[in-house]
Amino acid sequence: MARIKYYYDTETCRYERVKTSKTDVVVNMLGFLSTTLVLASGLVIGYVNYFPSEQEQMLKKENDELLLKYQVVNKELAEVGNMISVLQERDDNIYRVIFEAAPIPGEIRKGGTGGTEKYKDLLAEKLTREDLILGTLQKIDKIKKQMYIQTKSYDDLVALSKKKSEMVSSIPAIQPISNKDLRRFASGFGYRTHPILKVSRMHSGCDFAAPTGTPVFATGDGKVITAERSSGYGNEIEVDHGYGYVTKYAHLSAFDVHVGQKVKRGQQIGKVGNTGLSVAPHLHYEVLHNKNKVNPVNYFFNDLSPQEYDKMLEMADTENQSLGGGE
Image (cartoon, rainbow, N blue to C red; front, side, top):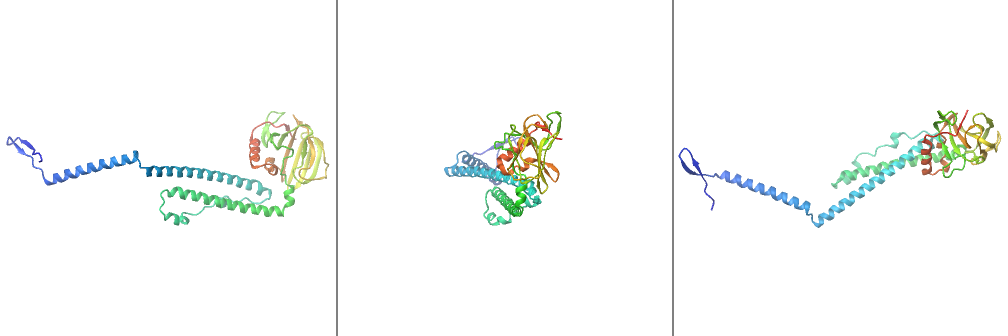
């Protein structure tokens, strides 16, 4: 039985019975039901979160594993992209320069892969993590396009090499002394400390430290145009390779060729020495293209692996002192 409630009426000085309308009853019931529903929902959500079912645990584990695999795939895609960038850079700055071919425009190399329209069949499936899947597919498409463009570039270079076999044999392409472990590389191209003047000056070639008498090799087919002694370079040899290329070998102790003689790549032309402005036995090596002195490191590609080439570039960029001065 419901309790009867009273209130004290100050006007009549009597206790009057509290009358509850049907509307109040309905509102009170709805409020009670709403509060109960909210509390029940909170309890259910809390229970599900803190006490997941075995099936939910398996699904969560599977999702975590898929996310980890996605992260691994993304990392691998990034590494592939970096390797393609290295290939593109060497293609434009070395191979195409050698064959005097114009570099591939950046907008072509980085061409888009289109919108999401090509994935409309996949999108129709209403995937939960659509953003991750579409992002990965677009990255893969971009890499595939870049690889296709790069392979076409290599096809062009192969065609050029067939037409220019003589040019390929003539262009400087190896180190001028035996240096398999790269330990003889002493100083690179660029501003270096002069060994005698002790000031920073342009070093227009590379220095290779080696004992006197170490064989020096022609780095490409050509014709000897200089084999003489000078005040700065000491005993020096110059080889004209044609196609605008000339190489210089300085501070030699002996000549093994004479002016006018034709030489082949890898043929011994002299021996390491310490003549001219030199502070220790070494070979100073220069490459000139169209009468401009260029970085010789870019012309060591025939006898270096990609890893060795990267190491050589790093060594060449290191600030150090040259072992000799030129004219």
